[in-house]
Amino acid sequence: MTQRYSFDTLGGQVGQELGVSAWLIVDQAMIDRFAETTGDRQWIHVDVERCRRESPFGGTIAHGFLLLSLLAPLQMQLGLLPEDVSRTINAGLGEVRFQAPVSAGERVRVRVTLASVEAKGEGRLLMITRNIMEIDGKDKPALVAEMAAMLYR
Image (cartoon, rainbow, N blue to C red; front, side, top):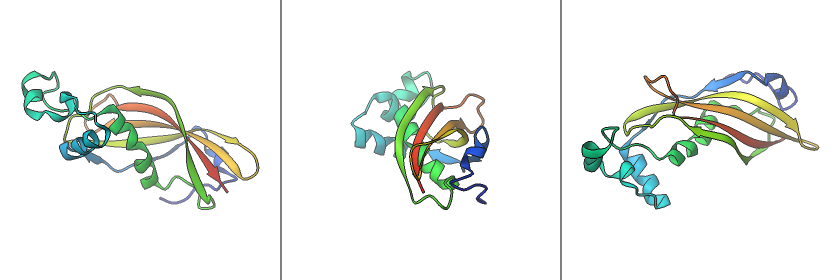
């Protein structure tokens, strides 16, 4: 990605799309690792055979929080941060809406728009992005979420 802005000019990008990530396959192995890590082993995520029989989706689906956790690495892949930023700290989430399930084996990507930039003292900016996680071949996104990051010059 070609850098189009700096720490000082980032505010001029508010309202603009900053990028779209590559597609990422959310496979059963990823879902299982997330279940093991978090302890969330609800059958809708990990029991492939039961899901084939009983789930309205015909198979397992990814945890919503797994999808949410993918936003940061997908954003990093885009190289959104200006080169003159020394570090970035996750500052939280705004509104998050899970809108459509992601079945095991489907591909997702994130479309990032700069929602706002606010000066927070000398050499710090609070950057809010709007993130839409798209599902390959589907009209409805998996989720829409605002993410906040503190950028340091």
